[in-house]
Amino acid sequence: MTTETQTLKLDQLRIDGGTQPRVAIDEQVVAEYAEKYSEGVDLLPVTVFFDGAAYWLADGFHRYWARKRIERDTISAEVHQGTQRDAI
Image (cartoon, rainbow, N blue to C red):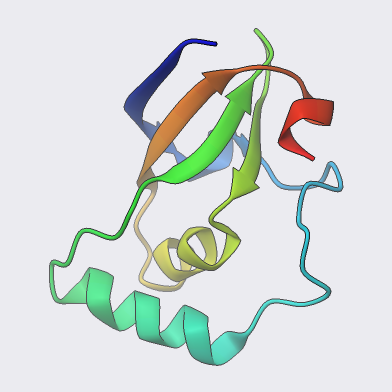
């Protein structure tokens, strides 16, 4: 499986496909990550699977929401070739 790190726009990421393994987002974690991003800290890239049409977010939902919170429109992503099922 091919993997590469890319900068993706948040609005390119599909977060509605049941790929979020947690019951809920922990707002305290989102706040902590948002603060780190605001300070210029580079957190690990999120993990996504690209099926040729959609980028399915598999790991990094807290980082995704932290970027949204500080009104950034991009995020570093480790992109794997694969489907929504692979992302799950």
